[in-house]
Picture 1 (cartoon, rainbow, N blue to C red):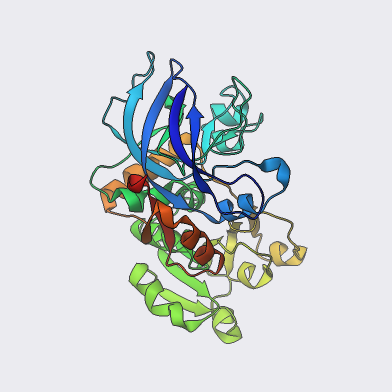
Picture 2 (tube, one colour):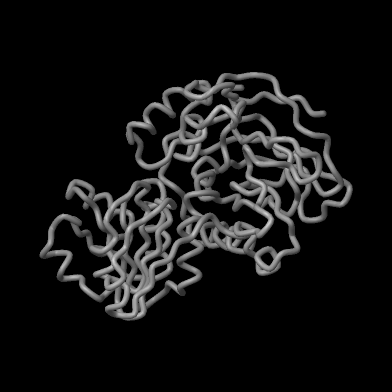
Length: 344
């Protein structure tokens, strides 16, 4: 086994503390990654507040680092390579979803980076709030060396989550994209849609985010409570990406979707209420998307490397993990916290 340091919570409602843990010895197709930076996602907050059956837990599923060792069968990576890892670290590899490059929808349930079940030994996966991670070669990604590594980390969750629907619905020049919410996911959606050549409209509840939205690449900013402004956008947007994490009314955003257009929810993945006529009038679609498959993930990193796109982050020493979690809980971040593991 490989000893490493990790931030682990042993019961619900507690802040992870630094402890000794063990990673598995490398299998032939494994890569050992020295973790340098790990993003802090809202999913981490949910996990830390979860039921006792989910503990102990080491959170963290968007991280970057360097390869420190490779298994005997590894061919795509060498020691010293800059890499990134996201929220999925294995899948069955044989179902229709996996064969289509959609490992995120694996019919046999993908293995998550933390609180997942290892497909070989049945152990529970421990996340990226740690100094090292051991992962199958197929779920390690080449990281553009020209980008700030700390700011790349959130691309592996927030970035891929908004990227996949953009690729699926063909966002590019001549398309009109709406983005609901300007948080960790939303700010990356704006940057990426703008870089793809789309006209971008940001929906926000308060006008004070207008300058930020335009600086990120938005062409238009609409306050969602302004009924006249919302009505002026009726039937105009090809794709609206809704990044809001809590329950909210969908009909106002569906009203802005054009004929045969789509409203895609990537924030709130729980139950929703929807009036059928809001979809029927205009042959509109309501869809959802979660994470991304392997091809789309590397595609995103390559695109970001070409266009110089990274997340807007606030980097904190890992020993200030309690500050990061408490401020994230209070939505006091613009737009993503990243832990620097060099202090461990």
